[in-house]
Length: 191
Length: 191
DNA sequence: ACCTGAACACCGTTCAAGT
DNA sequence: ACCTGAACACCGTTCAAGT
Image (cartoon, rainbow over all chains, first blue to last red; front, side, top):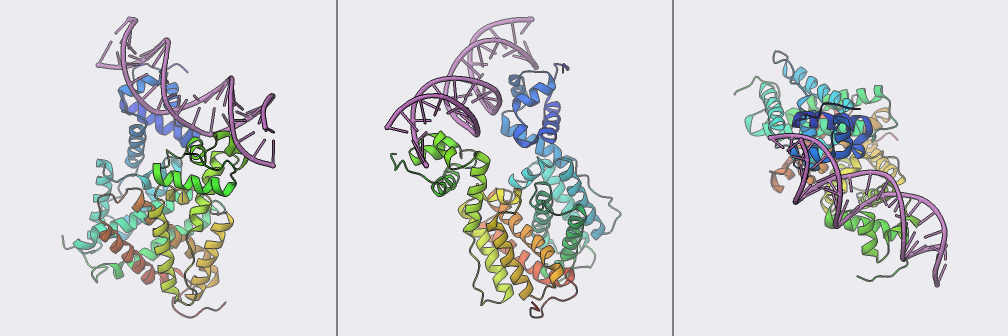
């Protein structure tokens, strides 16, 4: 498949994500990406430092697909919307998604996503000192669930069962949240 | 390092876990395992079908280290004990642990662990139809947290902060559980 | 500036051969 | 029965060379 021979970092990362979607994480090799771009593997090293950097970039791109919800929504609907967006990204990119749980969430995109959740939690009335802790717990739950779902841990269960699982997890969060914050759960934000 | 040249499956898997502990998942190669056993890589194929089978076996072995808690304890103390055991296994084997979230929980050891949690949930008064769902949610939370912890997602946080996070997660479960089951939360088991 | 050719060390895996 | 030698296809990566 001949293609343009002029490539850039964005093209390399986008193609990397495509390759992983099509042939899995084991199939995501420098050679496979290069082939798809109509280029030799060595050409990629001008745009990514090495394979690890390629993986980081691909994960970053996946993270970028998780768009924040409408700011007008109530805090609980916003959290649900974020959860759905995460699950959707996981289903579109099942091979790459589990890497999200295995890399430090220190990239700009990761930080931006976290700040969005912080804002929603403040809106939910979570007191400031508890905000980062609650974010870590909730993101762990949602990422862990979505990763389990797409990597086959819940292999024997239908989509319908898993949707109900996810709804139950949301209910558990809603009901349990007041117990883990300073004592409040549903007053308006204080700033 | 010369060693006995008679090996069996158990020795291969135990050595595989050791190698991963020492040099990481990328360093867990057939050759590294063979070297440590004082044998050529090809000799391993008599005892494991291939590398994937080796990984499965190593994960299975890690799972076997998570010993069930004392049956005399209350249900909540038992759940906490299981959570602690999972975190301990994760810290002993940080390279291998995240694989637990990526493989179908269909092995005998996985099934046995799950049945133990079922028993505790019944003791907690969770109605029978909700038991598997609650188990999936709780195991996702605990596995997801432990995996995040050891794979560097919470890299910037101290052990003390993460211990408090874990305690908060347990509190969230305790407080939220009644909302996700048929309506009960703390009566004794029915069988 | 950007891509290529050739080369290196290292993978997983096979198969016939040794003992 | 169990391990070894030799071989194959495939990795990631480097470096000097091309345009």
